[in-house]
Structures are given as structure tokens and as C-alpha cells.
Image 1 (cartoon, rainbow, N blue to C red):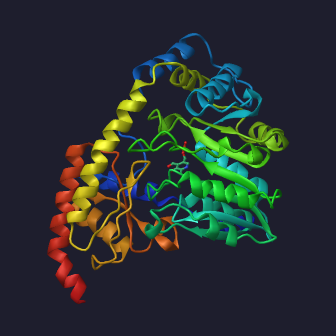
Image 2 (image 1 turned 45 degrees about the vertical axis):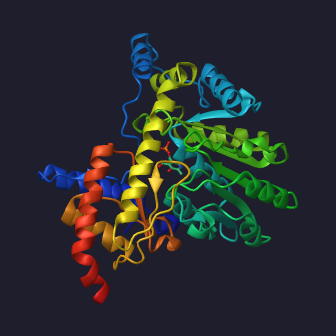
Image 3 (image 1 turned 30 degrees about the horizontal axis):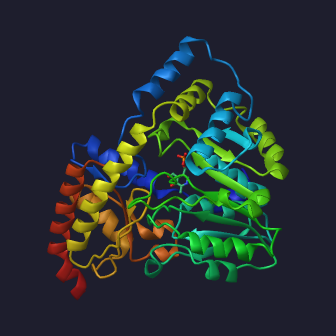
Length: 397
Ligand code: PLP
């Protein structure tokens, strides 16, 4: 019998991919499935970005690049951060990676081991907990609550610190809740962390350009006092509708940068060369597609929230960022995961049960509005039918 290291018995999943596979299988059988499950923009990558990749391939960009990314792209990332956030970052601290996920994988691998605590948001992106458990570290959930508008609380987070805490993972705007943590709360957290310079911070800001109602994105990069221990995760996947290109970027602190670069050399050598040229075109070319996409998400957000609030037993606060709503379904008469799976099997509507994002996700489901307004309306109508039909019987059981 083959024996792997114990971590592989603890590694988890991202159920959005399982739901996607099931939704595709049902669609292949001829069912009309509306997918509000997967977390990716339903837009095509803008043409000028695709053209840049094609040109790079035609021009012969077929070889390895530097492990940390082509210099022009690292410079473009630094310039983009400066343009958007008015923050100076050295291109020497930027690393190009194959997707945002690689940054969380690497950061958690770098700090996790038995005897160590790692704090992560719950409900939150499922890979945080999975990777923490893989390393043998103790996963310590930071509760993300509806009554707090799905923002994290600085006080509660600081209260979870122990002498064993080595890494804190933060995510705003957040998946799966769409929550955006206010600046005052981040200020408080950063101030509290001043006493713990031994703790690294991983700030997942992959939805940083998706906030609504004029709310500015507050980047952890804007706090000079933590820059020496901040790992900033971002990338192209969501902002430029490039999930399948596997392109991400990160900013690592000087003390860790070379460790991360060496991990890249050991694991993936470099990111696909043509994709890096596409990433360059994305950052240096016109940005109007980003604004147009976010404006469309905003329009759909209103439709989703209004529609969800009309469903029997469902209430939904207005998300402030990303492209997810996280309605409370605790009065709908179903366990959240049962509701999600019955909606998929019986109504052809794919959503994700809240418990797939953590224990505090019970009583909620994640509805992605990265689908056309028309499909969202159709999905809401099917959900209304289903819940009206089943609500009373389920509640009586
Ligand atoms: N971080 C969060 C919070 C996400 O929701 C996702 C993707 O869904 C990622 C990171 C990973 O992004 P990528 O597809 O670039 O690996």
C-alpha cells in the first residue's frame, strides 16, 4: 500500500468545482441549467488582451521566463498599484504566479506546521482552511457575521491571537459573502497587530476592484507599518475575466521574497510566457472593460438582492463588493446544502451551500451574479417556484 504524508488525508476541496462538474453533466444530458455557482466573470477576456497573447506566440515567446515573471510585467503591476491606490511598490517585490490561489498556497505552506495557529475567515474561501489543515497547523476561524455586514471585526480577530499565531488571512471584498470591511476596522486591526511583529498577514484582495456605491477599496498595502510582513494576493482572474489563463500577482515582503521565488523555481519554473504578455496588455491597455463589467455586476446585484428578498424564508443584505450575494435561508425550511443540491437537481439552478465555506456558513447559500440578468431572473423564478411549493411542507416536517 502506498503511504503519503498525513497532510494529503486532510486536504480539502473547493465545492464550486464539484457543483460545476455536476451542472455541466446535467447540461450534457440536455437539462437547462443556470449556473450561479461558479465564481468567475461570465465575460470574455477583452480582445486586446487576447490579441497580445496571440502576438506573443507569433513573435516566438515560447521559452521559460524569469521565475518571478518578465520584468516589464512586474513593473506594470507596480505601476498599476500606484495608479489605482497611490501606493509605491518596488517591482523587485512583485512576483507573477499561475493564479491567485498559488499565493495562498505558498504563504500557508511557508508558515503552517503542527503547533502553529493560522487565522482565516469563516465563512471564507475554502482553500484557506484546506491548506492550513494540509500543513498540520491549527485552523482558527475568524467569524464573519451577517449582523456585522459580513465584515471582520478587529476586536474579535485580535482576541483570537495566541502566542502560536503565525499568520492571519484577511479577505475584503470577500468571497462568499460580498462583505467589505470598513477602513476604521482595518485601522484598528493594524494598530492591534503592532504588538505582534512576529505575525505575517496574507491579504487576499483579488476582488479589490469590485466595490459598489462608490466605496473605495482599502488595501492593506496602504499601511507602511505592516509592509515588512504583508503578503498581498491579487491577480487578473476576476478583474479582467481571465480565470482560465491562470495569472496572478503578489507582493511579498523583502524578507520572504526570495523564499517565494525559490518555491516558484522548484514548483512551476515560471508562468506561461504568452499569458504574461496578455497580463501586460491588461494592465497597460485601456481599462474601460473593467469599469463596464463592474457596472454590469452592480446592475445585477440589485436584481439579485431584490429577487432573493422576495423568496419565502429568504433574506439578503446588500453585498458591498465582489459578485456574490450570501442570502440567509435559515427560515426556508432546508439545511443550506440540501437546498443547494435540490435546486440543482430539481430546478437546474446551481448555487453553493454556505457550509462549503465554513461552519458559520450554515443557514446561508452563495449566489454568484456572474451570469446574465436574464438568467438571474429565470433562476430566481425557479427558486421562487421551488420554495413556494416546498416551503410549508418543509417547515412542517
Ligand atoms: N481568492 C479568492 C477570495 C477567490 O475567490 C479566488 C477564486 O475564486 C481566488 C483567490 C483564486 O483566484 P485564481 O483563480 O486567480 O487562482
